[in-house]
Image (cartoon, rainbow, N blue to C red):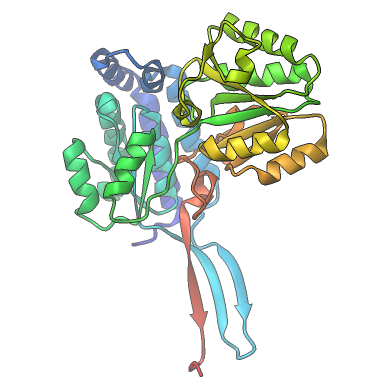
Length: 399
């Protein structure tokens, strides 16, 4: 794939910023069509679909932030000269072509494309049908920005495919694809894994846990739980499960206060059999599958833990490997917990809502990866490259 120099890439991004700013009304009008066609039976999906002035400002900011970052391509990772004189240089290199499949969120059409393009990758955008008109006009803006700078529009391409056509495309794409990122729920991820003929990077599934240790500061605990659960229920970094250590002082009184606070915020509560003994009016968890579920709703499950080891074991069994929190005043206990939890992000006395490219200082993100190869956590600009070895010799032969 031909490498584009950094100045030209930044010129395209400047053009895109201007085009969005000048065409706000057209974008809002396109989004109104999507909202009108959407059956508002899934609040989280609806929230993701909405485009307003604030979200447009966020799109422009995302492009601007990526524009200001250094070009991630051709950066030297290592440079070693062996005893035999062979010089081996390892540098960053583009993936090539990335495909992202996502549901509802038009802002992904901005963030995914700006990151892929700045990292010198082509990107294929397969958005959900519910955001068709919003995505269509945003890709039109991208093409205008590319054409203004004498580049082909195939750097950023929108795929207009139904489910069956997508399945066929995954199995036999019309061009080589180097990486696919499914950004959505379990069914989407499984669908892509079953049908893709190239590498798939898993992202998007939350099911995040929070453990309240016996020495937790209760005021901090309530603040963190409220923020992590209610700030944005449609986010994959929202809180789903809380495990409360049975040895915490005033265990029953604190459970009752937690229930009161959450219900005042209109959060539905499910409990395990141990917590049910205290919160007698709360709904009992009937099926183990609930512990695996990402809610994406004003709903939370509360369970009891006999100790930290029990909490760690339960979290590693059921969580989505996204974000996990411990509330404790002991740095030693926090370190032990964080080192033994198998999640992309682990927190001590802080909300899961920080698992976000912008909040973590990464900037715009393609997704939050819960895979262990090649990267875990927010996929920002620096993570959208692979590597390549440059080996320099002088007639060297291997013996």
